[in-house]
Image 1 (cartoon, rainbow, N blue to C red):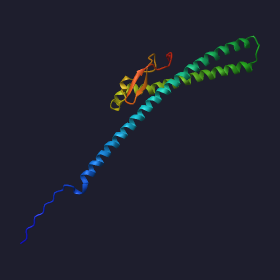
Image 2: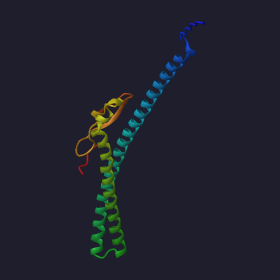
Image 3: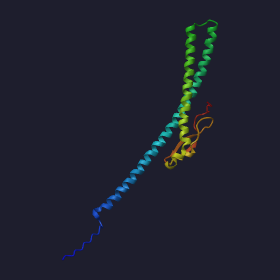
Image 4: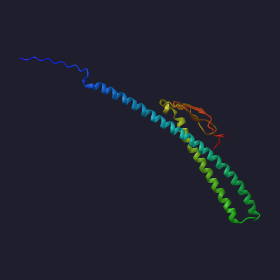
Length: 171
């Protein structure tokens, strides 16, 4: 008869527990870096939407001034044409330039509306970003008579400030 007794105490178990803990710590750090990267991408997207809306607004204002100038030039050409000081070619050329500036004005107007709607999406859906250190609930509308914008003030915060558009154009 044989009786055997075996006792196994896994104190080190091949450092497997230590390795698993180290891997878990690395996974946590990787998740934090991924979170920060996504947060930075979102911040960049919102800043780009703000800049796009601002440039679209400036283009709209420039197109509006151009249309007004072209309208005035066309009226002078029309007056000259009526008294036969210029030929139909010059008159038609002025008329075509006026139509082109009107088309440019409409295009810039709808581009501005589109860009501000994108910015408005981030404003109205601020609750989606609550966990991302963006303070997105402080974002304000940048059109329809309300002047405000998103300005990046530090790595963890956004604050509201003047949109820098000068006078807001009512569309």
